[in-house]
Amino acid sequence: MAKSYTATVKRNPGRKSWLVEFRHPLRNDSNNKPGKKTRKGLGTEDEQEARRLGEQINELLKNESLWSLGAGLKHQDFTTPRSSRSSMEKLLRAPARLGS
Image (tube, rainbow, N blue to C red; front, side):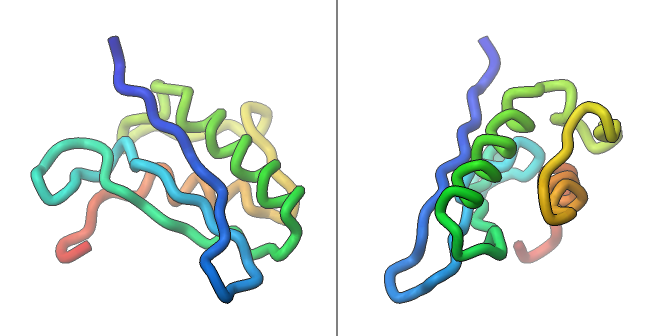
């Protein structure tokens, strides 16, 4: 059975903007195991929009065919408001960086 990844939408105390937190299927943690904990600002103060974006990120995380460096999303496969689609694509496809 494949590992399941889930995104959580939350707000840091004292901040107005929302963020998403999830284990990244393409990045290794400090123990060199897949699923490095990742946090990314969603660029919105609107809770409903943040939750909608979180649901869309969860849909991406469910799609195991995207869990490779060579995978790409087709425009018809996934769209999000405010041009955040490309940001989420980059976030999910980003290879691990040294020192990150």
